[in-house]
Length: 301
Image (cartoon, rainbow, N blue to C red):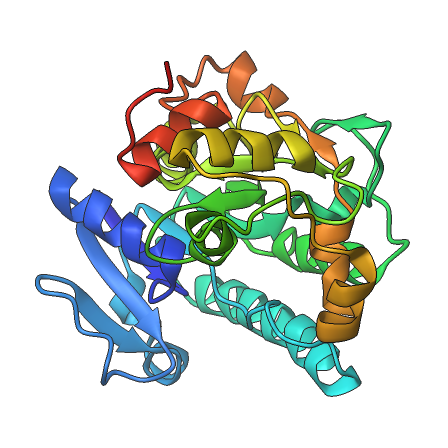
């Protein structure tokens, strides 16, 4: 297959590129700059080049758009505007580029997030749950998906990503660090849900969404067994054979992170109903299996 990837220089994008290269697919990396993001055997083009000459993308079989400013920053009003505008602008750029193509790809996979459901300690959400725009991130994702729906492709897949666990990026290395020094524990009350996924399954499900013509619309990129934060702490402590009795107070997180702290103090129980209905096989369906792989630890006795 010939696959274009925008936002491919980040954590998930890097794993995707390695995956598709191993499969022998032809890749086009779309970036703001042609320098500094070279992958052996991967063609790199800039957004500017595509705007002036969309021919670079003629004949692609799929476009994966992961582009957007990181949310892992203090949410000042300026940062909030950048988080939203970066997603809307890149998604609009995808739509504009495809409109100019004579041969449009049959599928576009656009990043999204499970934040669209809002937060709750009692509700369970799947792809058929209504969207809620009752906080900043939920509103961002709602507008982001509306922009994705305007992309002129036969099939649009919106990947509603959960907490992606990997050792070379994302939040997991920072989450695991205090446990390694014996200072880990639950965050806040510990009752908030964590809907997570192993980076290996994240890559595999994006590939599956490209190749399975029956999958379209929202797809929850989460493992089938979400856990509460206190269980996450207990499992990680057990896998690392480290104590997990030092909680992080909610007020301390709010003081340090501001509004961003909601990502750690609030959560939602999100299930991958659509993937399970299409018989996607998770390699790491449980948290213990995922953490054992990521840490290289042996299963506790």
